[in-house]
Image (cartoon, rainbow, N blue to C red; front, side, top):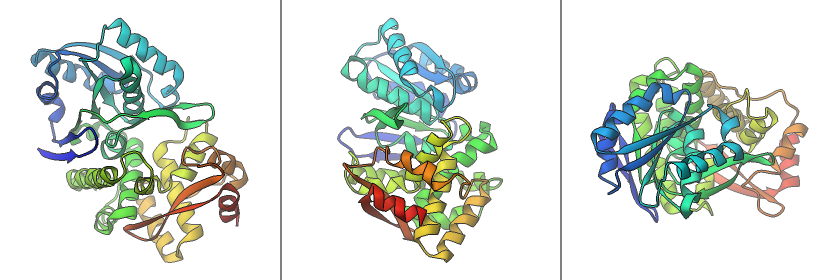
Length: 347
């Protein structure tokens, strides 16, 4: 087992261990005196891992209740959020108990927000089961839901009490979901670590499992470092949004249905690099992205995407921040007006 300690205002450990999900009860019992837990999951992950988690929790003396909702970004909404809060109340969860997010990014985001809101704050544990959630959304304390106005516009900063990453859970992912997570891995290489990018570049979707443990550890360690320097997203942490301004716009244009977060990030990274960085770098990023069966652009007119960018949560007054990498391993935060960003992308 590898352990990464995240030293934020509420410090916690990220445990990386193959088979770790089978020991979750033991690990969770070490960070809480309560023996009552609520497990929040979706209908896919619940079918795969809920029994394993329940068995481990019960072996460690926990009384557990389970809430399951429909998988997909469409469920990261006010309606599901309200249902989770009602479930926590019906389960008589108190401030001294613990909530467990078992699943991918959608489960982690909405469960974390519920944990931050219910009784004004209950501790929660992340057990991420997708690559994207293991290397990105489960670490750092950002929780949110989507509303009609845009993605992740309502949420709270809520650091987990513990994160348990089991790389074996990634073996049950479809190629499409694994590909989704690789977009964020490529992002980490682009913004902070050329060696990581080269590692990813030397593999493809069919061979990446050979180095998955190293990849997961490296990505989480990069996220840890960035978050420790800027827990509440006021400066450096913005570099984690490379590709996200256009990526979120693409997700919104598709109404969060047939276009995943990873697809949006991949296309967003390639599009902004192609327009604002060197042709050589853009081509290298494009080839790497294609090796993981991710999109490198879109046929949607930029005029239709830009209105979504103007609603992005990274916008401040009339300004918008975007991230550019002019070389692999180094990211720059650029602040422009929404109008200037529109001219850059339409030019």
